[in-house]
Image (cartoon, rainbow, N blue to C red; front, side, top):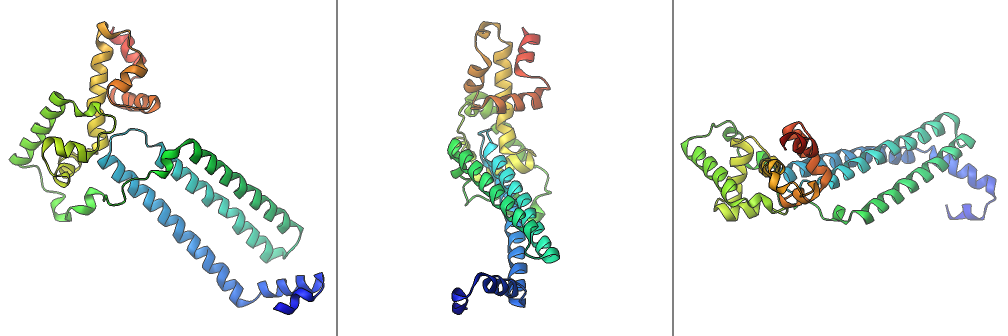
Length: 266
């Protein structure tokens, strides 16, 4: 192979074309495609698992990070089809002008998407603060035979205690509340508390806490003595840290926007 460097351009092109037709190169092409598919399937599974763990353990309603990663993964997967088209064109037409144009398009597309990803990451540094990798979905931590066991008297008492605690102490007003924090406050082991909420109450921790936040926001919005408070001030007061997330959660829970709800209540 070293001797090819001293040959003319035509000989080099002929050598490269011949090399790409060898069985070993075809094998590596197929191997690359197989590994690519495995990588992206694994990426989707990891993101889905992370979202489940997030909803079961965190209350910060801003899940835009996971959504952004999901969209970026889909985008790069779609861009991969340009590579497949390039291989198809090469197989049918050989190394011609059409392939050269596809290679150019391929390069610019990946360059644009990489720059967009870096721009998104710089404007959203939380992209680099992932979900705790030690956490596992509750359904994977509990034996399958226990998943269908109905709540007994002891579980019902714990549920009532938890509801009373939420109303009296209002831990949901802390925007950074996690299931670990609540576990320490109610003196219930994290695993038992997660099982209680996610399985016996059939709610994600995310939804469980945000329902109390929405209820608190509804009380404030209906209070004429606090009508000077803006919606932005209220959402921060009840534990949210994103206006879009607050509006989405509020409309999902009440069927109305916070502004419309206040107009009808006052």
